[in-house]
Image 1 (cartoon, rainbow, N blue to C red):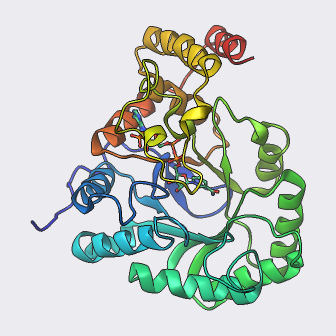
Image 2: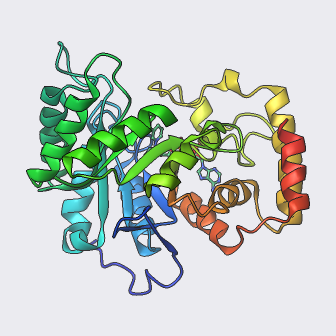
Length: 331
Ligand code: NDP
């Protein structure tokens, strides 16, 4: 069946400016880390992406190593792009990244110019794109000089292979240094991609301040803690869940689901119900309450999860009492 995007797709999504740049991102973006590999049902992948785009999710986040196998998610995305989304390319923000192990030998990971330029060339081929909108360095490299890594990102932009650049998993002080090097090169840092959820709070300890001060955006990942901050694990581990899937590559493992965590989620879930939300919606709303957050990237194994998560946009205001209750549950 051929695809035509929903004509109402821009009616309810909210778009936030990314730092001081000219680019706006949807408050909710879709990531393809899991659920878009070779082992996943292609029809389901297609429906998830169509559902996202039909609801104003213009931003799709990938990386060289998403799969399985590494590269698999970019291949899946490339097929769906060719089949369905090509006419809409100018309405889309596609990102990819390089930093983790991708191919054997000394040039297949970290942050050398050799690796970053080659990896992006491979990603573009897999996705069938001429350029990505955002290209990220996926993790800091303790050995390569920062000037080389940032110089490679600047080069990639000048070559027209990426429009903007980002970094991910850099600490606050590493980010400040990267910003300074990039400013000196004339290609400002657009965005930082960081793990941020009610359960993982490190960005509050300096990173958000550095980004805000320098006019750089922030996009959160794993804001549902890979599904922990939803209702799904309150009564055991469902067979079709990520925790049961043994997917590897950093996917949630069942041993993380301790009684202590589940007990906290149970109490958070009661508060969510009082707010008229489900657990997932409240967990996402809690990120969106901070206007310094440009966007958050959801993962989804079903199109219904995308629809469910989008409802968080209806209420991301919290009273002080609610925030205090959340803190007392989390501590
Ligand atoms: P989430 O924390 O959003 O977890 C996604 C999982 O949560 C889904 O697969 C699904 O689990 C469950 N879920 C999602 N929505 C709902 C819902 N409404 N109700 C119930 N369950 C729900 O994000 P991810 O950890 O998947 O990360 C999202 C994206 O962030 C990635 O795809 C990637 O783009 C980016 N990322 C970046 C990293 C980096 O280093 N820069 C690292 C990790 C992620 P189930 O499969 O069990 O149904």
